[in-house]
Image (cartoon, rainbow, N blue to C red; front, side, top):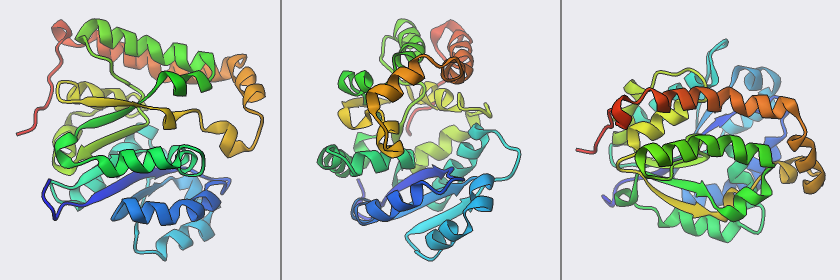
Length: 266
């Protein structure tokens, strides 16, 4: 990688209740150690409900804040944030597309060292890289989460002969390649993550990590076993995951001859 290339982190920020601010304060020194810049995409609900938090972020030049438009799908919001970050960076810069809650969990728990090591080890030639939930990490998640998302992963394995995560939590990609693929990403819901995976699949490398264990019990400060049982027995939680896996499966079915147009690095 070009020595002048930067490593940055790109994260949506949806936190109307203001729960994530204290976590950001705790992990900020680690973020500044690992990354040169943080792009934050603030949702309308968050900017309306948490002006003090947004003011705190805006006061630190480490954060580059963008604001999402009301009445846009979550996929549209991600797309806008990713496009802004890619355009603001040099082609060789390495972007970690991830989520604040996952990063906070990793940095504030026993996974701290492993997360730091994995992030700091990535160089431009190693990308695009997708960190995948390991078997250990998946065992911490509710069974319905696992089984529903595995429908897409197993279908992708049958079609493409490769284990892929179509609802990924952490993707590392150079800005130039991200700029290249985004015009081909059309879905406005969370299945846009699957579109990105499909476009990158021929080049994509992956690494299983334990630090993508289930973050909710830690963030909610509640009993993990009890919460897991509640989520496994929740029809609402099951529908929530089917809502993005069903269109993802349709995307996979629509791949002509099991070979969608991928975008290759020049």
